[in-house]
Amino acid sequence: MSVEAPLSNGQLFSWREIERYPEDWLHEANLATTWDLRGLTNEQVTTTLGRLVDRHEALRTTYHPRGDRPAQVVHDAVSLPVERVDRVVTDPGEHEQTKAELVAEPFAMSGDLNWRARLVSTGGAPLYISLAFSHLILDLWSIHHLQDQFKALLADPGATAATGFTPRELARRQREESWRPRQESSERYWRDVLAQGLMDGLPTLPARVKRNRLELTLHSRRLGGLAAEAGRRHGVTAPAVVMAFVAAGLARHLGTERVTMSLMSSNRFAQEDQHNVGTMNQLIPFVTAVDPGATLAEHIRRLHWAGARAYRYSCYDFDRIAEIASAEADTDPGHDCWVNHLFRAWFNYIQVDRRPSDPADKSPAELAWTPLAQQYGQAFRVRVAVQGGRTSVLMLADPEVLPAEAMTDIMRTLALGAQLAVADPDRRLADLWEGPGRDLPPSLFPRDLPDPPS
Image 1 (cartoon, rainbow, N blue to C red):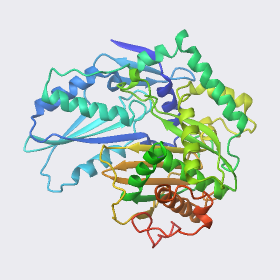
Image 2 (cartoon, rainbow, N blue to C red):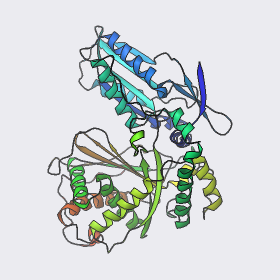
Image 3 (cartoon, rainbow, N blue to C red):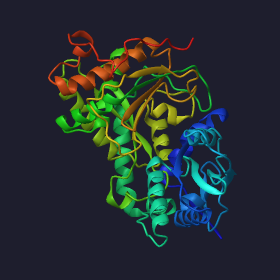
Image 4 (cartoon, rainbow, N blue to C red):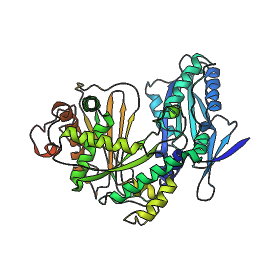
């Protein structure tokens, strides 16, 4: 038997975000992981995976349009979407290619389980399983939970786990009278942000419309370690340090002293939500001053607390906020793609694994342009991923707003800011561009810069 229910706030946000993607970019909604299966039997793997699917509704959920707002359908049982491949594996990095192949294949937004897996064996003995999930059903936090529970069930088939609220339960709670104060608080916050004004320098696009973009990535093992050290020194988080200097660079190149930054929130701050398995991420914007005369320490703390306040209001009904924005916004976007219009500059920081970054690591930093950048969505976006001790900062921008030289300078501003936030935090923010001591070691920023795509 299947049960139909409305979407939770997180599910609705993911739906509205993904439905704006052009058809040939839908794969960008996918997340992937690979689990080591060596030493296990096929029966152990299949049985354990089946227990995970039985335990978590998100893995048994499909989406279906219902007028202008989709619904979720939770199924009692589903066939495992697992492809089995037996072959001789000689390349130790083959699993990365398998994962890339799964991620590159888009899911249908409706009527599909929105996850798939490929189990690779040699001579009948399992080696690894790669899984791909649409952001419609899971976020990265949930994937970590699934992997931990998969390992626990393999070690002890009777193992239990805290599972939190299901997406269906969250949707019900968010419609109860007890939730209304939170909803009204979020709406008041949004009205305040709208009244402060969104960033006029960044144009927005209709849904599924493409436009030329540039995408630049800075890789550095040292950068994340310095950001973490600066965070500890100034009583903030490493993501706040990185975001603060991205905002500083953006403000400088837009010629403004006020910027709007949109943060990706996990919406798992309450203890009761720590073990929810589903999709809960939502963007939340804030408007803040960027004062060139402030010290680096002051600037970091200002951005940190502005972001921290925004997180309090980051779980909301997106369609309701779009209605409010349509009625109250000073500017008409000229289209109905409110995801693009309300989140013109967004920032996301993901700690992919638990390996710390080393602030003393002297491995050379790398700077690379993506040959084909995403051609849709917001005019400015930064996504930070920390994995294996290496920090990768991916910046995407509309070249008519931020040309290649400006993007490169913002990356340099970030690297220098992280270094000085530890070494000389009383320096002025303006010194990032005007003062002495602007040389950077190759571990933070390369000396030879690549040419952008023509």
